[in-house]
Image (cartoon, rainbow, N blue to C red; front, side, top):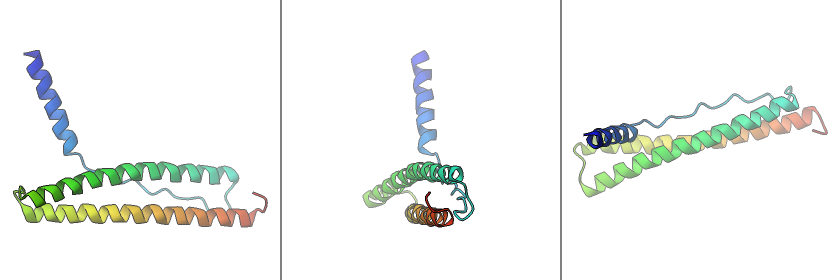
Length: 123
């Protein structure tokens, strides 16, 4: 009896994990390089690194979802192919947006670093 309950609990947990939504990380606010202290810039760098790590997890989640959807569509096993195709396209678009967001954040942070160095030579 306990084995059956344990098995049901594992199945329930596994299915809820499979249904979990991918969580898009919040893009951090970066320090203004023209007026930020060195500590502010270091904190900004850490925020960028934290965002990048979370964004990689988000993109991996999206990739898992759109890969599974594509496979289901290709195998002809989709109950609602149009809905699954729309979900696939939305996940691919979200993935591409996540890549762009990360590139934009990195570019913005590099700009703030250059401004910081220009505002206070020798940093």
